[in-house]
Length: 106
Image 1: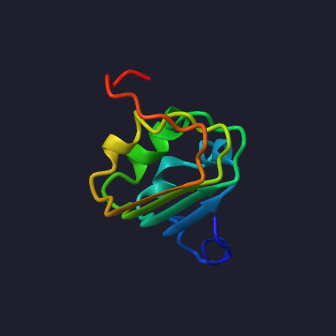
Image 2: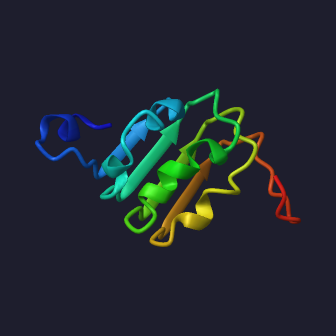
């Protein structure tokens, strides 16, 4: 979470940048209600966005920009993205293990 969010009196973040997806699950869901931009980078532990599906549900109507970059073990982005109804821009950068399964199964 950015410094600006930590300093403000409003507990709801607008921008989240992290290299530790598992920490997002520790935050209260209300913290994600106003998030418009999220960047997940360099997290070598995340394998699937299922791990943050609840987080994506929390910002489903506000998240407009999502960047996933250099997460060397990320294999699947299904089950999570479908909740992001306000998403305008999705950037997938250097996700070498990522596959797209046309059957819809993980």
